[in-house]
Length: 89
Image (spheres, one colour):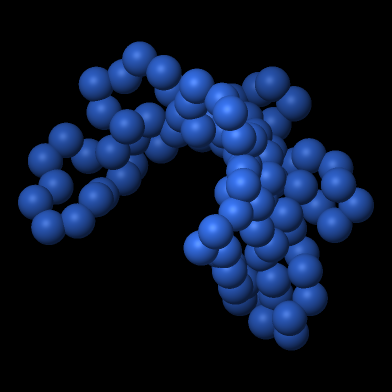
């Protein structure tokens, strides 16, 4: 299945929909505005929070934590030396 993410250029809170290949809205990315760190919630069409994504505050490299119900699922870290573009692990 393919998904399409359409990000608005001007918006408060970085909210946008992820659509399937038929144009149906599948997930809502709810960016939390006015926070010290970048925080997003991935919600289904009914508004239930599926996962939380937030940036780690004190880290040498950019680090994002993905959690479900307060339990960490994954940690994404930016590679130290990336010359042409950003690489993540």
